[in-house]
Image (cartoon, rainbow, N blue to C red):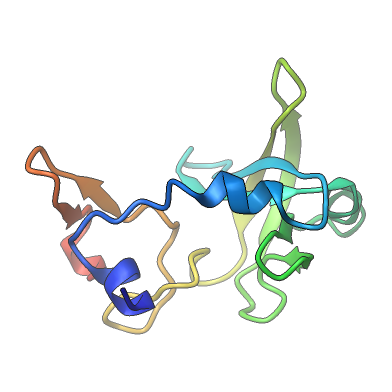
Amino acid sequence: MTHQELEEGQVLHLDFTKLRKVASCESDVLPAVAQDARTGEVLIVGYANELALQTARECGMATFWSTSRNELWIKGKTSGDYLKLEEIRVNCEQNSILYRVTPAGQGSCHTKNAAGVARSGCYYRRLKDDGSLEFVDPGQM
């Protein structure tokens, strides 16, 4: 399956091996969710290690640890689509964090709509009863 089919397709192809891959990365991480502080929309789910959390606090931007590249990832550093931190929340068991953010670019997803604009978040498709996917906003195709 190509990235195009995975990211723009309407066929469900969930990666149930993701956590196994995360567990084998070179750093201890926990889930890090980025949520638009204004709208409540979940934008991205990634992972953070201690360095990512420290960097986020220092630079004021949502920062993750790329488990596939094993490197620090300041969201927007290459695209310009930064996520400005408003606050960081910690869940009850202290095993995940929530970045409440204000998007400071065109969008926060690395995929783009037909107009070439980054989508507001990564959750732009809905699972239908028949198991296929549909775009939540037809204008975002």
